[in-house]
Image (cartoon, rainbow, N blue to C red):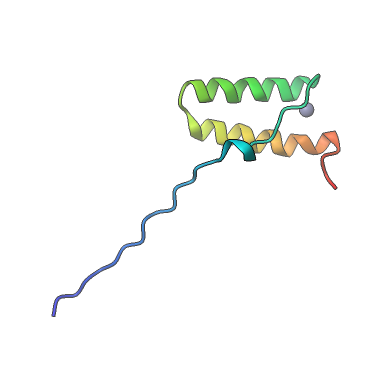
Length: 67
Ligand SMILES: [Zn+2]
């Protein structure tokens, strides 16, 4: 009897657009991060887009986004 090896497919991270943090209008930091994210998306660099989302989400705490 042959031994079969089952391999789990690696999880693929697909960030959904609706889950992306929104840059706050009038904030220079948000605007800069939002610009970087847009440029990364245009360049097809989804890894960088994800990084920008993390930065925007972390920064958004300064806007009182916490409950
Ligand atoms: Zn901001």
